[in-house]
Image (cartoon, rainbow, N blue to C red):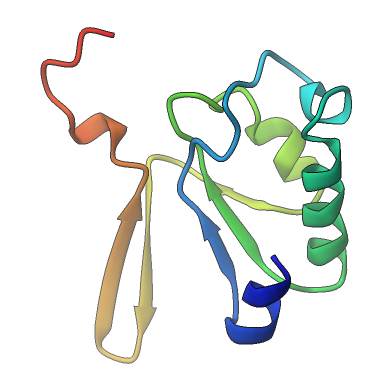
Amino acid sequence: LAAARREADRLVLLGDVFDYWVGPRHGRRCAYRPVIEAFERAAREGFPIDFIAGNRDFLGPGELRSIGLRVHGDAVVYQRGEQRTIVTHGDLLVEGDLS
């Protein structure tokens, strides 16, 4: 996070940031707490953090939104000049995964 703040204009998290997320406020009650607090501090100080949920942390967006992260759906498109880039977690692109 510190390197991203020095070297980039935003941090984009593409899911599976956390091994699992079991419900509301989970991030405040477990080992993720220092990470959640660091994200919250960075967002409060004006550093944009965008989040797209993965297949392991899809229950976390509500809490992450409440601490200032920009929560997106399955994908987001960024444009810089004429260049457009789409980013996604990618789990929805895997066909035939029965797990």
